[in-house]
Image 1 (cartoon, rainbow, N blue to C red):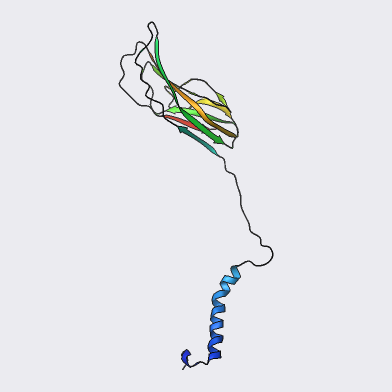
Image 2: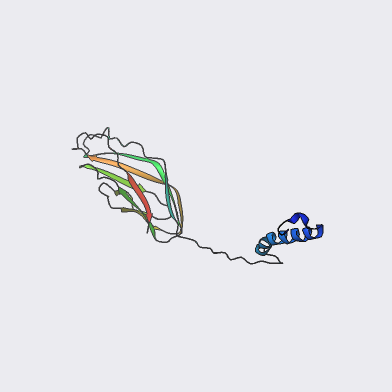
Length: 173
């Protein structure tokens, strides 16, 4: 007869059911915090933020004409913009290029800045290592600033086939 619950009377079944429910609810009740106030621990931190983004891409920089008597032919584009935000002082923007420009040509870049110091047109023709284009950036943002690219070639440079360069802008300290 041990283990056969069919033969227990109703009061014994009720007591057993109450004990079973209490044992199931005990872990839930012990986790719940009760009272007029409770305490929680919260950890907070602000990490260094350095973000830069560009919108738009410059158009193709094709030199198709020059003025008579000019030693340099050039074309510019200022159709792209950048925005940056940082919570770190003494930041700068540097530019690098994936491959050097052909002999007799130059690629220059200028980044406007309302919160830092633009270095004007900077030659990135051979900038496989980053060169500084904006300095003195502090905490805050610089939004919707113009990027101007100028491609120039000596008048003695012959025809050059269409080629592509990748310019990388980095917000760094």
